[in-house]
Amino acid sequence: MLVLGIESSCDETGAALVQDGRYLRSNVVASQIEIHNRYGGVVPEVASRHQLSAIIPVVETALAQASCSWNDIDAIAATYGPGLAGSLLVGLTAGKTLALARHLPFLGVNHLEAHLYANWLRPVTSSPLPATEDGGGYEEGDPLFPLICLVVSGAHSEIVLVRDHGDYQLLGRTRDDAAGEALDKVARVLGLGYPGGPAIQRMAQQAEDTYVQQHSTVKKARNVYRLPRAWLRGTYDFSFSGVKTAMLHLAEGATETPQTVEAGKPSIQHSRYTRMGEQAAQDGAPDVALLASGFQEAIVDVLSVKTRMAAQEHHVKQVILAGGVAANVSLRARLQQELQPLGIRLSYPPIDFCTDNAAMIAGAAFFHLRLGERHTMDLDVQPGLSLPFRK
Ligand code: ATP
Ligand code: MG
Ligand code: FE
Image (cartoon, rainbow, N blue to C red; front, side, top):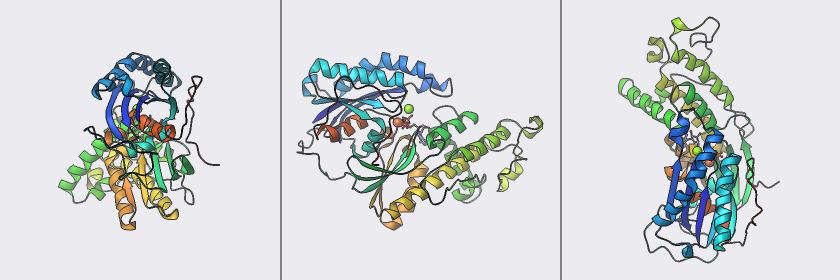
């Protein structure tokens, strides 16, 4: 089954052709990063206007890159939530209209569920593709149920037990900021631009490389600024607002030297967060790269330990990562370290399929379409949609 997927939930416009929920024929993403970078974050009104101008060219390019015509397509799928209402409307309306015009089955897709299904994608564009399978059961390379999924994106941080396709149990979620949101906000105050996750990762890498040369270990670099962790013991919930606030206080010291800090404003000298290591002690103002490293470490630490504990408690053999923060190399490496000794397999999508894309939409759609699920033309956007958890 060849599915055309459309994604427009935020500031990326995507179209992709995916066969049988796994095999990638084309994947096109038009990003507005350059535009929103100017504002330090996504401006909804600006985002939806750009969705509108990008959607048709992006769909046409996806078909051209897959060298396929409308006659080859078996179904059309588009994100209907969660996301920004104005942005969602563009992709959903385009998807429904194209399905109506081409007399094709249509399915609205949950964007978060699609982030999970990015783990089923294989970046294979070579032909001939494997023969179409019957019911969409297990194929070599698919994640194995039951599994634990760590959903870490711009707006969500959740640990989910997935027993089978569509069977989701929420184990824990963030009580305040999502991991991606915290990374984005902190990057903004550190002057690193938008999106924050990749920028923090780059700065952290830089600090760690320098530190390894000068001192000995990476571990030391990550602990020059030892930031607080909210463990919320006995739960799988997260809280990232404390570490974010600690960072904001430290960052004030990073952008202004101690002499220019206004009276009463918290500066690094007054901070209750410990500075360790020779470098921090010598410098007047904190080092932005070392701050980024300490901050990333604090987030990765909590995400990894809690995910490992959930995997142990529920005796799963597989953990998967989903969402933009799954692109983070430190998170991937640390989780691998936690899970490998336990014989638990870790998988994550290729980097380009962690952040928003339409291939994951077409992929997720297949697993519903194969069961005969369809949506009618009156399907509306649902900006606040969550995963369909069992009660
Ligand atoms: P949601 O999926 O919850 O609706 P979203 O679609 O805005 O939110 P995604 O596109 O899945 O979120 O992810 C974007 C987030 O991923 C941003 O917060 C960004 O900073 C973060 N991110 C991207 N790359 C990396 C990276 N290498 N390391 C850490 N974070 C990253
Ligand atoms: Mg995005
Ligand atoms: Fe997303």
